[in-house]
Image 1 (cartoon, rainbow, N blue to C red):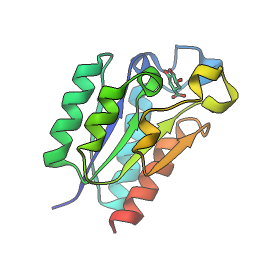
Image 2 (image 1 turned 30 degrees about the vertical axis):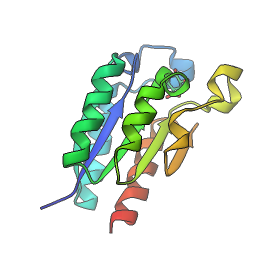
Image 3 (image 1 turned 180 degrees about the vertical axis):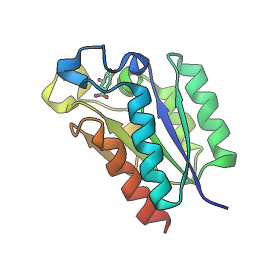
Length: 145
Ligand code: DHK
């Protein structure tokens, strides 16, 4: 049975493609999903791709991943900078976690420089645009063998 990777996306990422394209690019979240699924196929991995604008829903999805996933790729979006709840949920997940940001948060406002999720993440990718999801998947594919 192939390994399942959860790709979780936080608030406002449903608007990718139309939301501040100068910052987040022109690809939609559906484009990102298609790109990630195609790459996962090459690696023989399965993808559960998910987006929510609600913190508790993301927490529950991480709980679900505890039983099902071999790894998590998460772009917590604004919750990166605010959510102890998402950090605590990720701390209950025992397999690898990669944090992805489309933009380079360190080139942006000071409030984006701190990440609660980075306290748990095995790796952090920022500023590679949506290719960051593929870099995260490449890492997990190799780490999971
Ligand atoms: C996405 C968001 O929505 C912001 O709140 C984060 C992140 C950065 C991104 O670059 O993907 O600060």
